[in-house]
Amino acid sequence: AFAERLKDHGVSVLAAHPGDVRSKLSTNLGYGGWESAEEGAATPLFCAFEASLKGFSGKYYEHKREVLCSFSHNKQKVEQLFECCERY
Image (cartoon, rainbow, N blue to C red; front, side, top):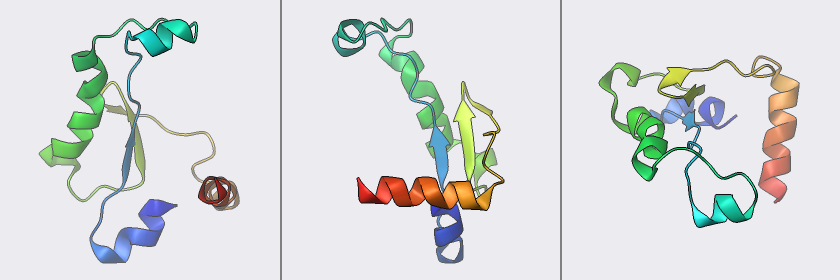
């Protein structure tokens, strides 16, 4: 939804999974995590600095690879999610 709203402003919007980092928080929540902070940061940094992604927008990445979202092509669902996030 942000990619669509910002396309005429020269802004690219990419979403990146933050990794499953071992931390006190993730351990206390019962998830544990298995990645170091550096491993968890790899995909967000890839999205921010990878030259080959310049000009791409509206994509989601995990482990430095594009992953398709099952409802990303359903504009109504995308808008509903955007509006829900906007409220909170």
